[in-house]
Image (cartoon, rainbow, N blue to C red; front, side, top):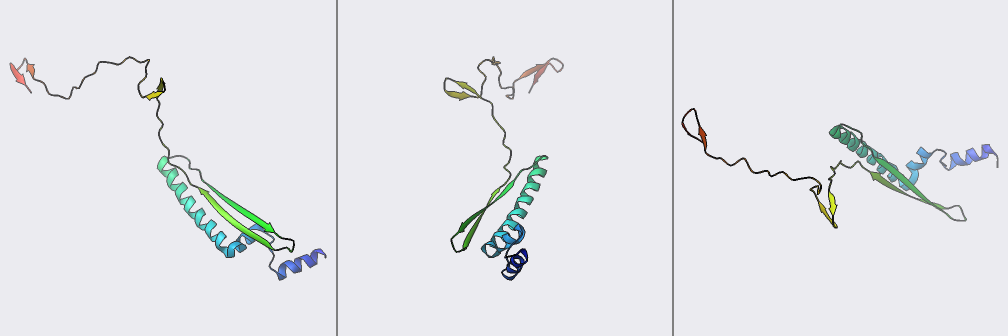
Length: 133
């Protein structure tokens, strides 16, 4: 079979020569529609995340195609789409490990004898010669 014959066979049976055309045929086009929808959703989430954090946002779409071919040329193709969306940044905590337990207090740092100053106390005002509250 010549190259020209190959092209005629491909044209007759709508054989896919490019990936973008091939994807539209997998699962009767449902895979391509899912990819399109997931892309739009991911891009919106990336934009929102980048604006909210005033930084960069990262995401990923992974397309997996499984092929099974028998000795007669019958080919079964199944696709799977996995989307990794941006995760919100979480603050970390710094703690100290003390004898198998975590503590938020630094064992090497001295503690100050602090007390509550929000309670009201009577104070003498020398100018008014009385007690001020």
